[in-house]
Length: 133
Length: 264
Ligand SMILES: Nc1nc2c(ncn2[C@@H]2O[C@H](COP(=O)(O)OP(=O)(O)O)[C@@H](O)[C@H]2O)c(=O)[nH]1
Ligand SMILES: [Mg+2]
Ligand SMILES: [Zn+2]
Ligand SMILES: [Zn+2]
Ligand SMILES: [Zn+2]
Image 1 (spheres, rainbow over the protein chains, first blue to last red):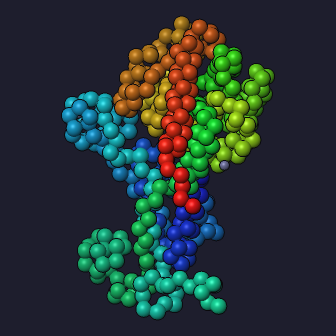
Image 2 (tube, protein in one colour):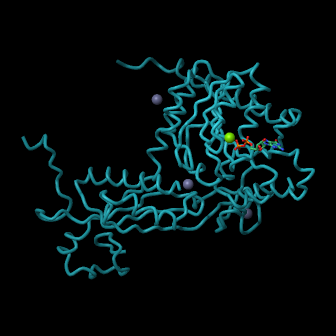
Image 3 (tube, rainbow over the protein chains, first blue to last red):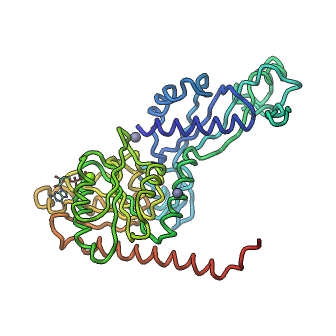
């Protein structure tokens, strides 16, 4: 189950983003998993709560977007939608194609609950201990 | 998606799905990231590749399902090439615990990675193993990945080439069933071809078609670890890759020499 390893990487990346923005509570996580990424969305969805428990993502809803496989034909230069194990051009049948999309394994977007107390909205200035003294 | 705040609650463009912008602000802050999920692994993989390139070591990531014959082929390959090249093996496959012992019995250093129940190797595990090897004394490094046609494909290790092995008993349709793995192959080995006589429903042409359907132009080489005569093309492929790796290295060095000295 390398989906556990993927979830670990996801949580680490979220922690890094959150630390940079001084945010602590993730509401929604949007990731893109292409059909040619080697990751199974249902397995990932099942692994996520196990890994997220006790982390910054424990209350978050995970949205997995899958997308389609698209190739560009090197013979007739058109772009077409194909399946993961038949990447031939839809128009002319040539197998000399280039993958345009389908192998994504990307963290697209995060939505955080705002920190409870705030000045006037927007992202709060991050106050580091060093700035305080 | 809401165009005011970028949040995806509701699918209208008007910002009326929250009572007010103020309420909204206390609900969500959206941050666009667009980062590769495995970027941490990719960074370590790039670092591994630097280690290997510095010492002009060619690294081969050997992947297959369990029992396809990875260790047997490595043993036969060592027999064929140990007079020519310094070889080492990183063993990540726990299906047979004595794989590293089998390699060491050939007089070649082997590092056994304990993956526990992991289904793949990652760049961190390889990095640790690299630091256990003397790369100065090395020409070719084989990484025997965990026997699995799914998971290892997602993780870059820092290798120069992916070699995917498909054994005759597994059937010729495997490239269509495991497209992610076979799409990543720089070379496909069809192993146990001595069994073609008895398993005559394996069609090399069909396997090739499935691979081409993945838009993969990789060479396909049939081998049998039981017959050294069948290893010639595979061994020549390794020789060619090894000399390409040396050329890469010389190119880098010559560029460094040509570059002006760094300003202090
Ligand atoms: N007939 C035949 N059997 C092989 C060949 N290569 C390996 N085997 C057998 O396949 C089994 C698994 O081999 P092994 O090298 O351990 O596979 P690995 O799990 O991929 O490393 C062993 O019983 C080997 O003897 C081959 O070329 N021909
Ligand atoms: Mg083995
Ligand atoms: Zn896995
Ligand atoms: Zn075409
Ligand atoms: Zn290092």
